[in-house]
Image 1 (cartoon, rainbow, N blue to C red):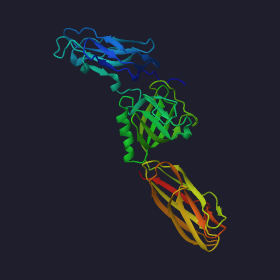
Image 2: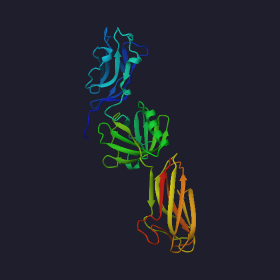
Image 3: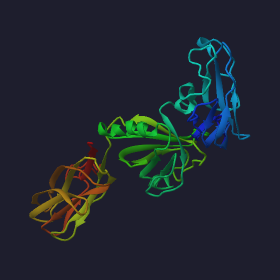
Image 4: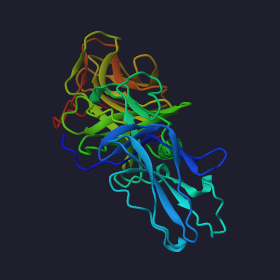
Length: 381
């Protein structure tokens, strides 16, 4: 795909620090950086800062050229400290700035100390939105930490994704992720948009509704609601720092859904439960769901009708009513469930008389809309 803009910036680590015993050098840690879309490894090593000016301060840039693999110092122009300007760094990746005090400045020490170094990783990468984190995409689908600075999903097929796993080893990621995911305490769901920095047209939009904080990574329960191109497989590169995680905001309305019976279900045998509509797989650990069910049932004869809301194992609510041969009865249930994991909830009905039916439409004056038997749900928390 065509590159929409040239990327220049730190992808991983490449921290610039003062020496343990300060001298005239800075230590550059190993890492990865981009210069004009070229990615390369930043080798660890020291760089020497030139001597200070007698009377004027200076702002030097610690830079890296990913094309050549060379890191260096670009000296700034000596000037009054109130008008201090950085040097021209066009064509380079800036790793840090170092303020070099003049020998006449009261702050002059003759060495490079931590307080004069400004690490560029602490600044916002303006080619991405401010509310973002830069990750490296991993193709692993394992239920584990995807690795330092990496993001992974539980499936390579978009429609099958239910989990996103984000490592904490990205500057500022842990507090950022905790801030965004703690929104779950006060709202039902929120959106994360994940896209390629090299080509922002490659993206997926996730609807997130659960979280699990682990020691080195967070696991988000989610589903893909929109994606670029065909919603089949992921199209991210594995280039370092190219996969951008962007917090979009909360969902405007609670997560909810309704499923109705599309055709009558004959209850051939007496005292046997037959399935009506179901919710599909919904919910997750720590959530609360409000389930509402309504069924129109013909009993097959004078007897008793029963209806349940169940996940196939646990009965969460049930009710009964008198059954009739042709007139039918309306049964209604409401319950709140607190699932330990995603589950499918359904209506099941039975009659003490054989030959009854769960009806898709009322037995008289029907609109034909097939909504006479339905189950609805709303996520409360």
